[in-house]
Image (tube, rainbow, N blue to C red; front, side):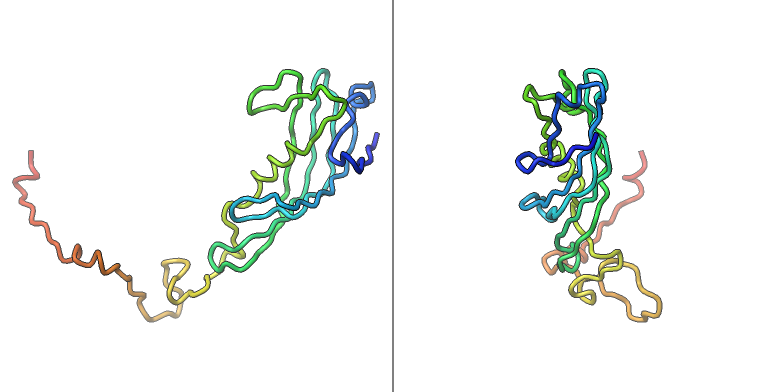
Length: 181
């Protein structure tokens, strides 16, 4: 049985219908996320289809959703975006196990928004990167990698903080006798 989203409760399943003998329902997800973000990435849109199935005293919610996000690249700081596939496979039961399953509410509707919010936040990139070969805003001054590129004849000088230069002049004379025990 296909469930059409309710304009008042778009991410909810009707529990009495799920526990009837048909026992399954589909829900189209089309959620524009306004303010859901982490420190460096912001969720834009979540779309796809979820299936809820009655499994005895439990409800199993599963499906694949696409999450669109955007955020500043960690190297060049330009705004970048991407799409992640979020695989949903969650269980709702009367006596939930802490951190593993969700509780079936005592109301007539199963609201998926808290579970989906958790999945979205876990799926957002911690530090977005526009591309693997991004060289950053000033690649000559702050190279993204320490390896020398082919055809480069100049040696990159390693800059030492002036406050630590004096440590480079220190020498330690150790006698071999002290090292033997």
